Length: 113
Image (cartoon, rainbow, N blue to C red; front, top):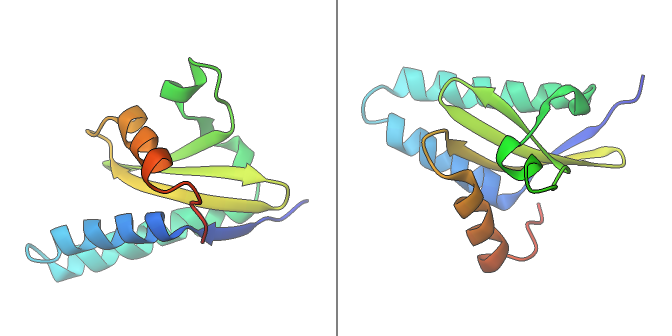
């Protein structure tokens, strides 16, 4: 079976940090658990990442290279290229994903790790 390397972009790392900082004042323990659980979900992408669903908002306009994990109230968007999985963003599921991704493309063209 093919294995992939999982790489977090700076944007995705920043997204996760913001989520944890938001939760931390209410409960440091819950913030810590959420952090490690999201990291674990992404680490599991090393094996068969294409089994995750294509982002529906993008699929309906013909963009098929982005996939996602739904973890509790967050969406973790990633793309698979050759033997690499790039985690691109972690966002609250109540946010408009299309607008957020468009903003990211306009503001940060590289999305590099």
